[in-house]
Image 1 (cartoon, rainbow, N blue to C red):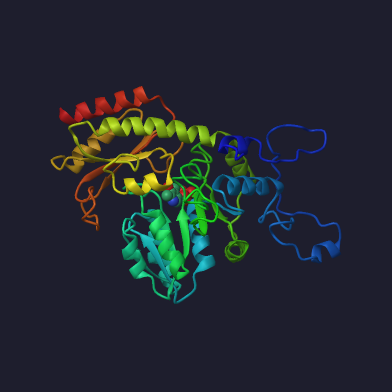
Image 2: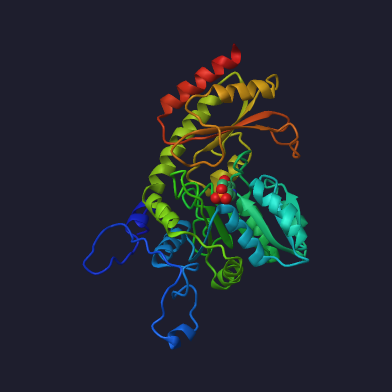
Amino acid sequence: MKRAPSTEQIHHPYQAPEGYAAIPTGVYKASTILFKDCAEMRRPVARDEGYIYGLHATPTSFTLMARVATLEGGKHCLLAPSGLAAITTINFGLLRPGDEVLIPDNVYGQNRVFSEGLMEDFGVTHRVYDPLDAAALAAMLTPATKLVWVEAAGSITMEYPDLLGLVRACREKGVLVALDNTWGSGLAFNPFDLENRQGGLAVDVSMNALTKYPSGGADVLMGSIVTADHGLHKRISHAHRQLGVGVGMNDVELVLRGLPSVELRYHAQDRTTRALAEWMATRPEIAQVLHPALPGSPGHSFWAETCTAAGCLFSVVFKADYTQEQVDAFVDALQLFGIGYSWAGPMSLAVPYDMTHSRNLALPYAGGHLVRFAIGLEAEADLRADIEQALRQLAA
Ligand SMILES: *Cc1c(COP(=O)(O)O)cnc(C)c1O
């Protein structure tokens, strides 16, 4: 029987040193890792297996890699010092001058900045596609298209892409798919088994900002790159090694400490988030609530096709008569919500976004003032009372 993610994370194999049967894994730190003799030093070692140098792996990071691969349903894992570093490593591993990468309109902002910046400098072009329109994406694929990024759901505008349609279109043309899986984190859907049947559709690469759910502490930055195919893992691994994107073992320890509770936190935050999102939809100040589990939210039917959970994010679009100043004043009036980036930590956060310049005018948030909420671990009643008092100040 397949075990639940929390059981799997808590009982994932770890061999404690002889006579020391503690539950947590040891924190092994090194730059130098000593060889027995010169012959052992000269022996070629596959990086997934042996120890060469602290930058590549220690028993502690091997344990985290194995657990993250399990969480996401893949086989191989690489760690990077941030989610963004995981994204850039994937691009350097899979793209060469003359290639094209496609990114969705709802892509994580820094991925777009990287496509417009260093990727362009290195001769890789990009185009932006509508994540809700798989047929349009299929029509955009050319022989130069070597990688398509997908993001489910967009972490600000919250539209859930036609994930199955997008992956199917790429499969048909043999184009690789990289998923930014930070939102789902292996808990909302299985990126390597999107249809919940053996041999069904899968993405090629799943990137996760471990900074968010797996850590859960708002105290560490890290990213992961999970693959199921060994050849693909090797290609990305090649870039990973040359870029020198290693991780510190104290940071690895923090993520290992977060993983046993990741499933419980994910679902607790999901419950509170859905309750608040549904309540916000009844408020007269709000034109639309964007949350993929809410009928009427963009991509809701696609969410229902692959997902069983929905995480801690939702956005609200204020009615058109509210100005940016008023919406900012609402965010400033919140007492329990911090104003800041990142999410999936213990404290709830709120960030206002001006969508008046949105490029996709068909979407419901276009032209409006949006506030993205990231729900933490506080009690729902307290968060709701806080939003209520801030809305009252908006009326005053
Ligand atoms: C936060 C985030 C990242 C980047 O992670 P960092 O560790 O902050 O670099 C990438 N994608 C998404 C969707 C994110 O929310």
